Length: 119
Image 1 (cartoon, rainbow, N blue to C red):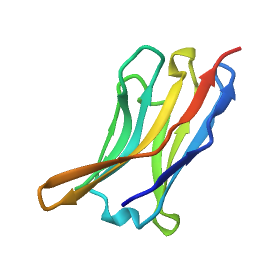
Image 2 (image 1 turned 135 degrees about the vertical axis):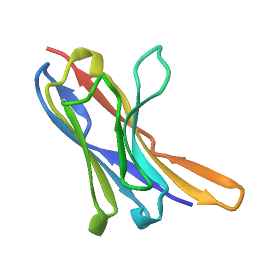
Image 3 (image 1 turned 90 degrees about the horizontal axis):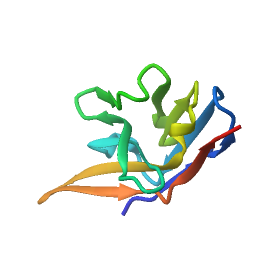
């Protein structure tokens, strides 16, 4: 089992910045992929940014140039630095980790942290 705990959400004005953190209960070296998704009211959950095996990093087009994903292996933590925030970035942000299992892969999710961008 893997526990993921997000923090750092809150209310921010348009143009502002926030940094989200996701602390994992075990070494993030063990994950096939790890990153952030978000779900806005009435919409489907979507990818924001993710580290994948092989050194690949993916960002949603809507956040490229504004958001940066990073990680600290010593703290088993992945971060999402969000800048130039827009009202459309308002959503619950979820941390996700994927592990390899004999039958394929297994997804783990945090409970989410709410980001509200509003003046």
